[in-house]
Image 1 (spheres, rainbow, N blue to C red):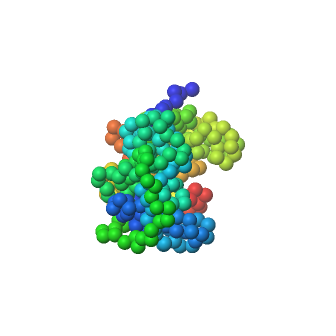
Image 2 (cartoon, helix red, strand yellow; image 1 turned 90 degrees about the horizontal axis):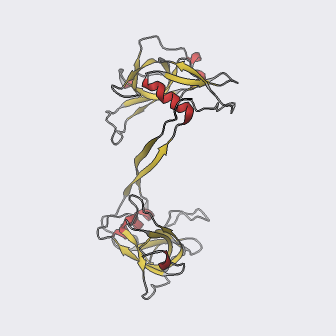
Image 3 (cartoon, one colour; image 1 turned 60 degrees about the vertical axis):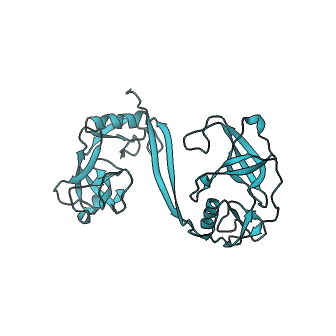
Length: 315
């Protein structure tokens, strides 16, 4: 049995979205040290605000200002902060119902230890020194023993100078990936510039990359089958937006490719042909990345296009 591989893996991408009038007002308000909520059809003040009533689904727009002070409704201690969390020292995650709000806001509470935190304790917002119109404009909450804020929120137009209209939220997942027996064998074969799949003992289909079990029959697979290296483009898309940290000029083509002998199409980039000439049925072959253990892209072989009937079940 081959050694099972294991390696750290990071999945990261920036998520960019535009803001509607409610979210725009909320985030711009944070920049101006103002906390806004929205009143629902039954009079509940939601903080953070949402665009639609969670009960009636009606559009909401009745914005109100609530106090920067509030009460902890529940909490959990975080003894080991991770990268990019609000505080670099141990802190409590808390749900805080701000004075005047009917719901609780999740954020961090700066406290010396778990013994200093309790449900029902009074807290207030500690604002960031530099604010840009993001939830991080609230640096954290801190214990507060002063007077409570008004229980009746004040109406607010939601209008500010230079409103925030969009945000970019970085998403990142760090984990250790262990591909398992089947995929480890697949990766090791790539080092030798071979592509191997596994055949189901029941339906006899060959799956690439292998998963160790047939997704159709649900039985274990073990018989290795070498496929390709050539294959057929079954479907494709033209990419017109350049990805961050990816040194490929747009437009380019990404395709599903059914390797000869495989019963499942894998995906890869198509190069060596103008993007507007890529088509279903195009016969392609791999071009291996120099000094790497993976295929860089696929290029046309010059063979006649495959007949649709030969790959229609893989589209």
